[in-house]
Image (tube, rainbow, N blue to C red; front, top):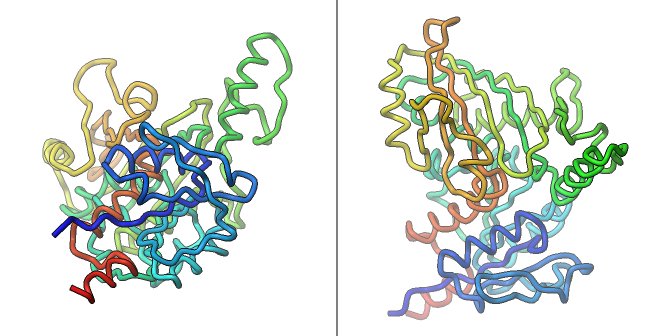
Length: 353
């Protein structure tokens, strides 16, 4: 019997995350005739890279999701709210990269290296949420410690690249950098303050408690993914003048004592984690390690001298790749590899076998 190849729709194919999703699908051997690129009417009719070929973008508004096994959404929350339920109603398994469904109790929020068990009952017509990019890399690094001894508290400061703000953020950093280097005043478009040669200590809207929504996402999502509402999370999210890759200074307090060497052993053996530590002045960075790569990189491992059960670490990852596109594809791959029914067409094959 021939191996079943799922039919995949990528929604938001012309955006930064959608383009990386298509690149990853091509890398993993998915055929062009089984991948459909979707975007707004404005982008429809254009084309996007898919491995060594190009795919024509189709109009999301008029697309019929019948026969689609997986719909990978990354076109903004309002688009997901409008079209993800339609794709699910047509029998697709929806994997959504926006915040539209993350905080709904019965919709799983999944990082495969951490809580793949949340996918075991998924069937056609389900919606699965992809977490925020900063949450993903942090929980991948912390999950082995959480499983071993439990984590009571997390203090994290994120240093997030402009690609997290989309194509407009990338353009603005490039334009402002050029302006600064020619002694011109930078023009403000995407950001409220200049981002070139600067750090902006607010990402997303301010909440009533003084935290930003980006910071609160890390609180809500970490507790949901770890299935532990007792984990305390205190986050500060900062936008920095880096094009790709997020960095995080993470400080944890464990529930039980654990030695630093045991932490290193856990991280060395953890799926999706690469430890870069031990050589003076050589540490993982967004530019030298993370950009364009799949793993979450961890360095600066040390015991917190201010707390008897404290551990400090530095975590970096490509926010567009692991923090968004790759995580969605990994969810799909897990479902494929673990025998889940993958959509209307597959179901029809099974019924007729």
